[in-house]
Picture 1: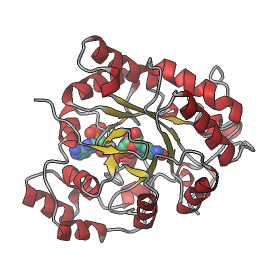
Picture 2 (picture 1 turned 90 degrees about the vertical axis):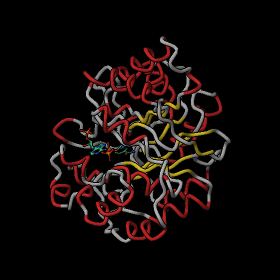
Picture 3 (picture 1 turned 60 degrees about the horizontal axis):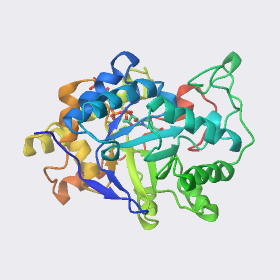
Picture 4 (picture 1 turned 60 degrees about the vertical axis):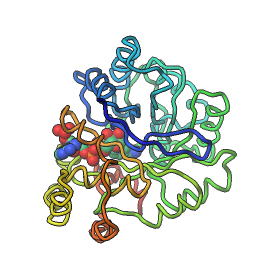
Length: 322
Ligand SMILES: NC(=O)c1ccc[n+]([C@@H]2O[C@H](COP(=O)([O-])OP(=O)(O)OC[C@H]3O[C@@H](n4cnc5c(N)ncnc54)[C@H](OP(=O)(O)O)[C@@H]3O)[C@@H](O)[C@H]2O)c1
């Protein structure tokens, strides 16, 4: 029998799966098959982005599953993100429509401002995905404010092109600022969250505003090893941490499942990525056992404020977490 994920209710009443599949670094060659197989396995939420460069292939996987009648569109929860170089008011809708066309769908269940960084517009015909860098490895900012971009996102929501609005990589200060101008408060915040970067204050702030939190990079340094990030190589591997291993042994689960359950049991959604079918299936089975309060506290205590997905770590001179 296929696995499934419980859902959480967003502030607008929409149900979002607590466990989804992350598409960052899923290769173009394998993406359609991976998405199709993930749907077969029971995944319903897919976390994509312009920046991952694989939305067309992800859409092909979705199409195959729809054509075969495995699922209906309304069973799926498709997430995409607005890249930094499309923050200018007049660029938000055209790029959202292009991304919808790439996926082959007519609405996103959730569309997220990927980073609180506005970069100069790059036409898709010139470079896509545009990335952070312009000529000579320079980064060129746009003058558009986050408020303006957010208002353009709200227009997409009003028009029904997107069914929920998300923000990502926002700090508490920015979230409090959104509250000053939003007509529709963000429905979700997506942040880096693992035992080395717990961000409990930010999570509590979201809770107080009824904003759902989605954790990315739940396995901490693991995702950043292949990017050759020195910080990730220097950090102790979470899967081999003695506390994680002993909790996993006690529950007869893998360390990865413990890391994901630590989040889901606290109501935080997860979107693990795997290029491997058996790990992908394992990662969906992370709501069928419970950690003890003591175990959750033990994992919380591993916090060391260690952030991997900081633009500064990729040579982008924009210190958004300063
Ligand atoms: N909003 C943002 O700025 C942002 C930033 C980063 C990520 N994200 C989203 O969050 C998703 C997840 O984060 P992530 O991709 O950084 O990392 P992740 O899911 O924490 O980790 C992926 C890494 O863990 C390995 N892995 C997966 N399942 C495993 C298991 N059960 N046992 C052992 N190893 C396992 C994968 O290798 P294999 O593939 O070989 O299994 C890969 O190396 C992304 O795909 C993306 O959708 C968003």
